[in-house]
Image (tube, rainbow, N blue to C red; front, side, top):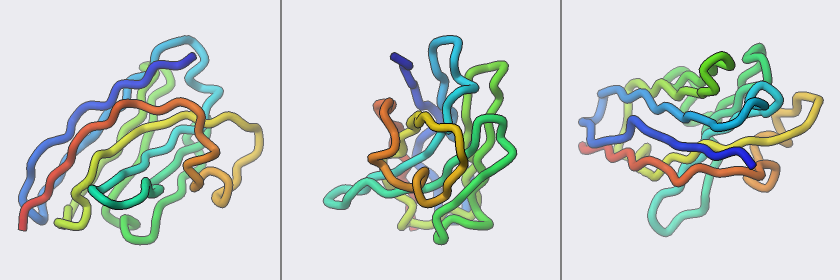
Length: 128
């Protein structure tokens, strides 16, 4: 089973930036689609972004398009989320997750149920 560890969260003012990292254990990282999800207090976990096995395909929730960028480095078993122009409504615990599969589907990979390994999360707080 893949172990995931997120880092890079923190407290930032509105308009600021943060870069989240997610390090994965094991030797099969490149066989997974990687996703970022977030969960705010009292709300359901929601999709943020996903990236395909080689990084050639990405997909974003509408509210983060143009502000967030997902990337991965398979040589380092890592996936990243660059977050710019942060807003208070971006405040949440951010989780990375892995999903299997062989065909890219934005519908499938935007669903939390499609992912089978999850990290503990890192807190992002954006002050107004």
